[in-house]
Length: 345
Picture 1 (cartoon, rainbow, N blue to C red):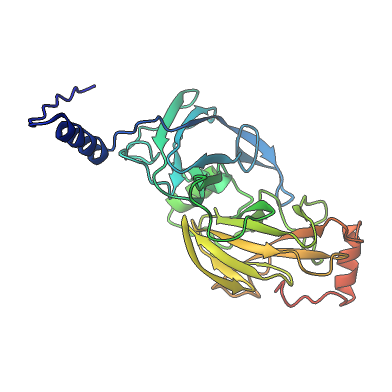
Picture 2 (tube, rainbow, N blue to C red):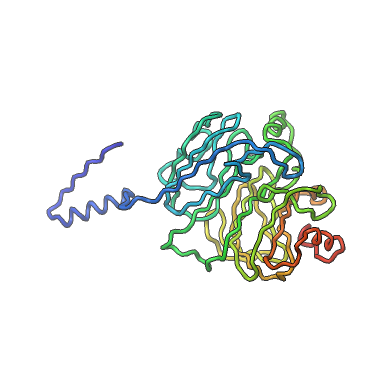
């Protein structure tokens, strides 16, 4: 480490002290060490069937999607990555601004790939930023098989958030999905062909709820549990590879409060387009009839919706005192036209 020699030429001790303080402030020297958060990420293959077809997906610590990386402004983040794949790996931290360091962002050119059965420790300090981000593989089209997870950078306690403290938080990772793994998809692209229409949309690694007869039986879907009258911060990330998605929650307003790490002018939406790589936060108040369940939908945009109907992810918003205990009842009501389908299509 380089040594800095300082000499202050002053006629009085007070001016010398002032010069020293100016130097420390301008050079960014901190009087107190910023806290550290540490994570171990073991990246490996697991077998999953998100759309009803068994396939190899990339998990982090056995989870698909991977675990939350939670930090606060100015925190030092240490992530020890163990590559248990059969090919080289890099993890990138989409949208994270690293203080005085551009050599930990996990892309080819600034980081050497982590060979199979090797490990590497990323260490960086999150800059003066807040908000919702995600990590994902940056090599070999691996993101098409998973390996992604959410990042939350919280405000420091001395800086309040510009809205009332939510009663809770829910994270949704939405994205297009193929029943072929990234190696097969990579071969298609390398041959000069297009991938074609995705096989579906996943929400938090799970396939769609059986909202109509086109959805195969036995698919595991996501249920988000909420309490009536409470307001939740909903963080939504599009972690797909090519498809813009329209996100909405049946009969609920989405109050936009943050986009890609920046607080915004607060605006209400009934639905919102989220493009690949983007992250948003909404405040959603659970102010509807609490005896029913509601759809959470992510569907393809800027396409022929009739042809791309299968490219739709559907989860369930479940109020804690909902009287619908068997979701087959929801499906049967939809078939009979009891629940308005307008917001699903």
